[in-house]
Image (cartoon, rainbow, N blue to C red; front, side, top):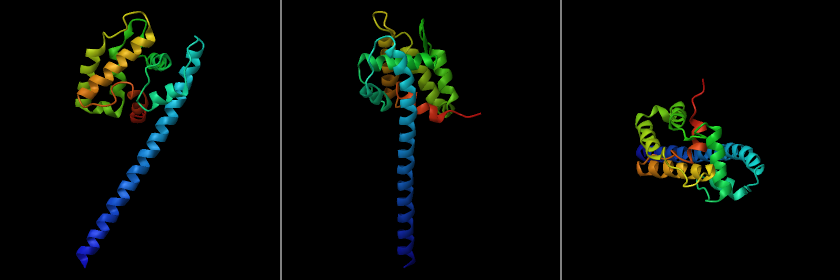
Length: 171
């Protein structure tokens, strides 16, 4: 009888933990989406002034870490990278990117930082064959994401925009 009681109690505890984990993940996802939409709205407004249309699908794809390959999405990436100082008129700024990584709690993981350094080195010279900062941003972020995935390190590319701010260390 005690054995059955223990099994039932343990099952209940495990189930409650899964429900709690699902709730926390849903809350995290909703916060991430809100933060993402706030950030993309700022860039959408900037991009509109130069005549590039950004749709809700562009924003949603980027917020879901599944970006479209439209000009609007690519220019959102470019704007975000500029705002985070990952790019400037000289291209991708590897040091600023790595500085950002190290400021997050993800940066406390030595293997994660090593993977980020390796990936940033591989991607630092990527750029469009023509002078288009939006296309270059897309090429660099796709490289960071794809190379990071090869190393089993997620969130080194475009998904880092919206995941990492929640891991930032607060002083």
